[in-house]
Length: 195
Image 1 (cartoon, rainbow, N blue to C red):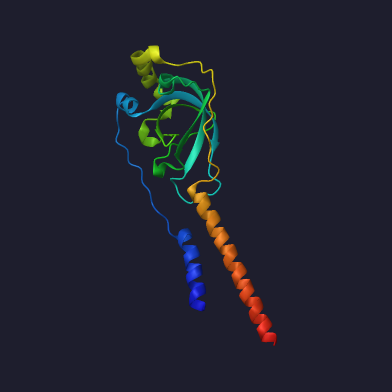
Image 2: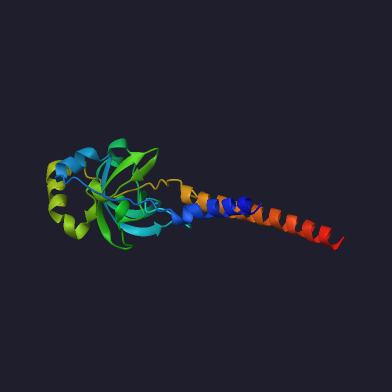
């Protein structure tokens, strides 16, 4: 029985003590390559950042809401006009996540993956202050396609819990179930001992 409890404890501690190490390595490209590779290119100001409730992994996604200033590629070509857009990135730079700061402005290169816009360190996304030359180049190259004044707002659905959050909840439920089983066995043992 002691071996059984030891295995349960070991199984519960395994996700806590085992860490996966990630490293981000990007190939530097020019503005044209970033632009060509992206499905969506826009400038905008971060109006909100939604981090996971529970996080066990540096690659867990965070959702960054942008107030869109200009769209250079993507939405305007599809006839979709937005005031705001939500873009996901990995939580930490070690997993190629971009470290957005609320109220700052950025030039964002994003790609759509299963209906979710995603960006990161390797996509070409950068602070608006660092992207002035790129923006001038984009405006000179595709000036007539720039969309500046969004009219319609279309919200993207936000999922409530990510994979790491569900994992933590599942582990907590497993611990509670084990504690209940142990309590039942202890109370039976005490009851049998009194006889």
